[in-house]
Image 1 (cartoon, rainbow, N blue to C red):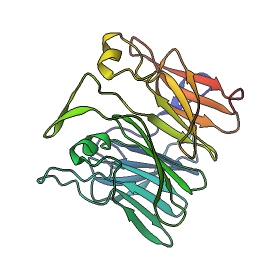
Image 2: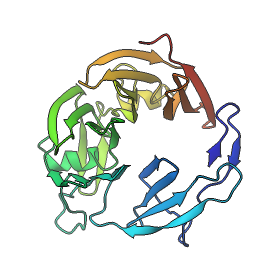
Image 3: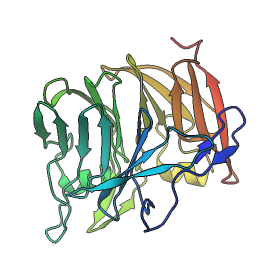
Length: 278
């Protein structure tokens, strides 16, 4: 959808759900590069492209698709660059294979295939839907898992080099073949990473409350907006009254626009002025 950021009103539908030409079933990747929107349909194993230059008002132009292999979990598109994250399954009969991180540029291709946690059963669930962001100048990469609060920082100027891993809340859950069971300590990780030249923004649980406590007390899952530098150091945190579902940073306004989830599961568009936070 195309949404008016001042009113929260849906102005126009952009991409339809479905299996027809230009339609999408399930996408872990939504990437806007200039006026071109990239969506990865993991059900169709395809990367789809759309021309949004006519919005709002004109119809979105479907530009075509490209087949993608290895069941990527996330793709980030840049000018003449592409970063692909996969998560090879620990199950022998799985079709999910491939190196963990692949960086493709006009100068070549680099791969990185290590995880910050050695247990592959844990990492497969932790990074099945990873949170990923690249700095605007394409020199840094940040990755966070679904369960457990870790933040990995990489240099991607010429290849893929791990700078450091920050560990805030350890992952804790039981693996049952192709599923998991939450324990009394299972906690969600960072959510919806967004980057600027000098900062990383992320949603996070308040304190170190495990998932079961949050559900029992009907507390928001991600009420905290946390700001890190590109060394992975937390600089400040901002508590909000709502559950932050996803958000974006407006550099011109120095403001955060967030999709907020209320207690009745309704969604709202909120704005936060960031000028008082350095």
